[in-house]
Image (cartoon, rainbow over all chains, first blue to last red; front, top):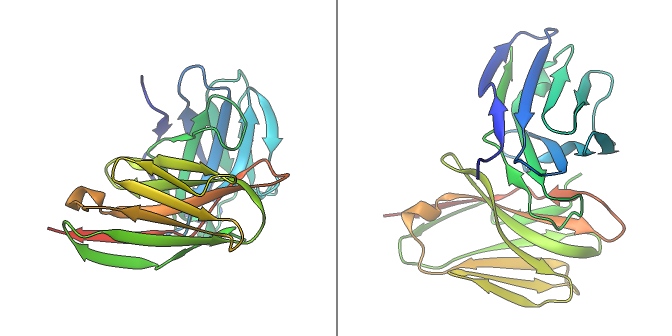
Length: 115
Length: 111
């Protein structure tokens, strides 16, 4: 089966600019996650969707980050305006359901550099 | 803050040797998982161990869990160059809904 798709793979922007990332999960997976992984650290959950509803966005910096999954399939994550500390890899993952022990399948990530 | 902390931060061994990495966590958990991340295949799930299990095997992987010490270990036997990657433990806390990853151990297997 096809894996989780993400685009773009790399993005370089200047601070205060905006950027958007796209994710298409594995077909049939109800749960979609966005993680931020700063260099040298483990992934940190930003937001979790179950179908098109938000399950957990407690760690999403809502003053600058937003995400949507309008039709319960693909999703976009936006940063506006970007700060230097947003430089990281943004990983999208999906799973069959929202139980935390369900295996999560990760995409290749989008590497963001904010100058 | 991260729930899990891996030890050591970096490990370098020769092909054929065994590699052991440890994970400690802070709160009571339902399950603990190990993931591997390398540049070729991204972040991949390796194994899950439930809080009522003490040991689990999968191929060359052996995971132990000691809930009294809030720690887990991952043993990779007969390591190969292809095992070179970062290894993360991830926990889901009792009463929680999210998976929390540790900082990771960078394993280098030299041919």
